[in-house]
Length: 255
Image 1: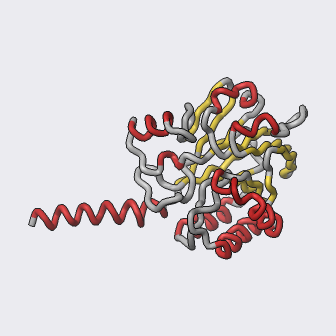
Image 2: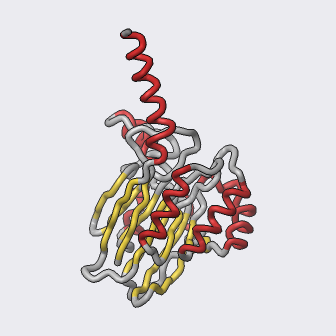
């Protein structure tokens, strides 16, 4: 009898890790105005393989929220991406609201391919450049870049009066060494770490902060330094299946 209980617990844990938690979409919110009139959605690291329930949940939530703009923080690809499904999915995103994206590390070797796909779908790529976006009566300044390695040739925002300034950078590693850049923005958005994907307190943080490609002070959730908010999302998908104590996440920003 005890063996059956143990096996039942093991099966339950496996089902939760690989079937349940990866399809639980959690919501985070940030507000930058007492009277907001514009709403932005931000997500990253969708790592599309094939169609999954979380993809539908994400689309439904975006429609329900009535967002004015969608920001994608990179890493659409995975080891075995169904490219036709990926194009179809991002086409649906673009029908909900204008989409602005940066490349993630999974797109670094496929930027020519992704540039053509995004162009076909009407998705705006802010790759080492900035854009000024008018949303209703609000003026948004947006800069996009894959990581701090690209800062030296990124075209940052010109001086102007913005209602909100966002720096969207795929990988947050070592951002703390570039506070002179970060302090010019109200909000820094990042992904890449998946929040650990399998989150074990202390252990996951230690591994991420000391691993090549992930090292740095910012790896999960919301931080604030010198008036600049820094948000590192847990992402939506993963380059391998399964999540534990790190469910998929989307952020809504109002200003």
